[in-house]
Image 1 (tube, rainbow, N blue to C red):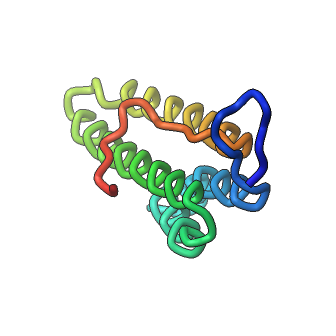
Image 2 (tube, one colour; image 1 turned 120 degrees about the horizontal axis):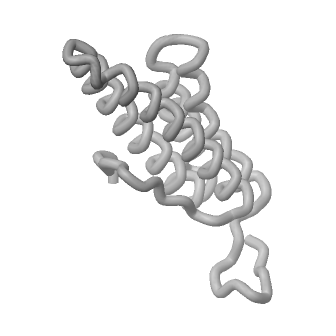
Length: 123
């Protein structure tokens, strides 16, 4: 781990930062195939979690957020019966996209990111 003078905690290695970023960005597999947003972070996290505690923590955070997004999307689909689900689905999708990009960038900088509005099932 590298030490940055103005920070009290050591920064994860370059490799650990990149894998943590990939944990977040793997959610974009959901744009290619169904449930890819869950499978992508799960696979990257499971394969690389022992590399560094930072990768483990960010992998869990990414997976927890994608589980929360999936549950919110299901709720939006159910609410489409009363029409409010359509705008809510768009809102959830845009928010998930923006927050995932922010998380990936922060992870690549070596800063742990905690998603807002996230149900943390995996500890």
